[in-house]
Image (cartoon, rainbow, N blue to C red):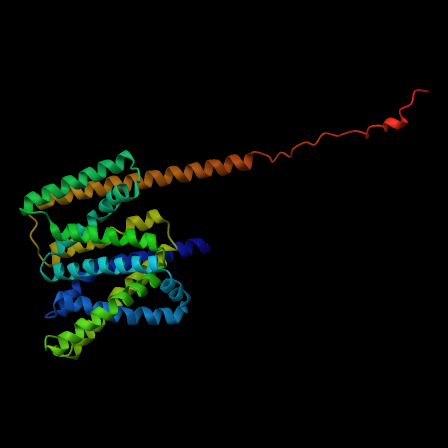
Length: 332
């Protein structure tokens, strides 16, 4: 019963995390007239404060010394911080420039880009269904490029930057809260410097927009950290296959907002491209579920075989009485 409760809680945490990521396009327009770079800098600065409070509550500090002494890991954290900055900044710009649908496409094709990077950079081997999904994804990008008259660069940069971020995070191998704290710490000084420069040149909107606007900018820290904390809570409670399915909630919500709330155009060629992307994701999902089911059946079969086979001890032959002493073997 306890295990079921934990999994149910993990499912709710996962829905909360991806739901917040999916609905965040409603938040960024509230920060206008702040530009995307200023919003990004505030997001970096205030996020560090939020994760510092969270670390204080859970009392996790030992990892800091280990990270500082490990130059390789510190370098990887810096790369992760740079790539997620590109991802965050472009996403904010896309939402505030009426390109929510194109941004959602980036997160739809992100799993396909991740698989392609695994093949090209890590030498991973794909199953036939995965190859078919990647090929369908490439076809979708071509259809969308023809429809747009140019490659959907916002989608591609978002997908590749987030896939690179995931690859680096895999190599860093740190907890979600700790890695976010490290990344925001790396970004804190340049972000704060940029905000001070804006204030010195009179370009800052932090105070000139009023107290309410300043509070909204400060809230970017909570908007950044809260979904990640929920994601971390979900990741340790639900199977990876379930977490993989939940990840599609965010781009689905974003796409729905782009079409229904922001009323962005969806010409036929864009629908065709999205249909191909959804077909590719359906192939990936079907293959993942089939593989997981097969692995569970194999594990159950192995356990059943092990339980049915009695443990056999190795028989030790009786050596019999010790041989007679040759000196005693006299012919009488």
